[in-house]
Length: 263
Image 1 (cartoon, rainbow, N blue to C red):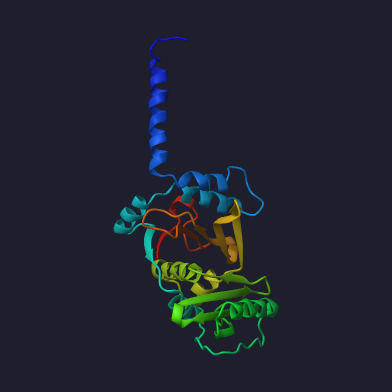
Image 2 (image 1 turned 30 degrees about the horizontal axis):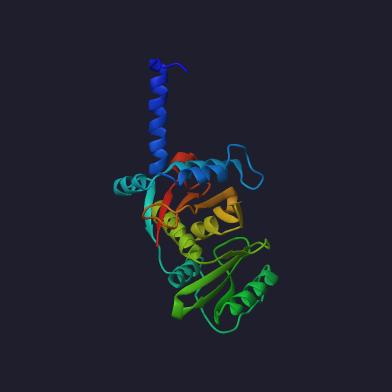
C-alpha cells in the first residue's frame, strides 16, 4: 500500500468530506426526510409539494429566528391549545361555535364520514360537539364538525369540501391549521371571504416511511397546500409548516412562508 501523502485535490476532498460529516452530526434530522421525499416524482405528491418538502428539509431553526426578527418569510409559531384553535377556525369560516351533546347532519356533505367521525370521537371519550355546519364564506359546500373535551383541553376537527372525502385533524393538527390561517390573515390581509375560500381544506396526502407519517400535505383550493414536515427540530418539536396559497403567497418555493411550530 502506498505511503505517499495525498495530493492537493485528494486533501481538498477529505476536508470537504469532514465538513459534510460534521454538518450531518449537527443536523441529524435532515437526512431521514430526504429519504422520505426522494428526487424522483412520487405518485402521491405533486411536483410542487415534492420541491417544497425538499426545501423544508434543508431549513434549520436559526434561519427561522433571524427571519422572524427581520420580518421576512419564516416565523416562530406559538400554538394555541386545541379547543381555542378550533373555536377560532370556526369563526374564520363565519360559523358561530355552538356545542352540545348531539350532532345535526341536515344538509351536510359527506354526512357518512361525519357520522363515522362522531362515533369514533364518542368511543374516545368526547361528549361535546359542534356541527355539522357549512361555511357561509366558501363558495363550495365546506362543512365542519368539532368534538372537544374540556378537562384535557383536547379537540378534533373534521372538514369536508364539496362532497369529497372528509379530512380529520387530530392532536396538534387543529392548532397547526389555525396558525396557518392566522399567518395568511395577518401577512396578506385578505378579506374574510377570500381568506375562507383560500384556506378550506380539500384533501390530505401523507408520505409514510417505516409506518410513521413524516410529511403531510393539507391541500387547499387551486392546488395550494399546507405542507407539514413532522420531523422534530431543536426548540420546535412539532416540526415546520410551509404554506402555498395560489394567487396570495409567492410562487417561488424558496420564498413561501414557513412556520416553525412550538407547542
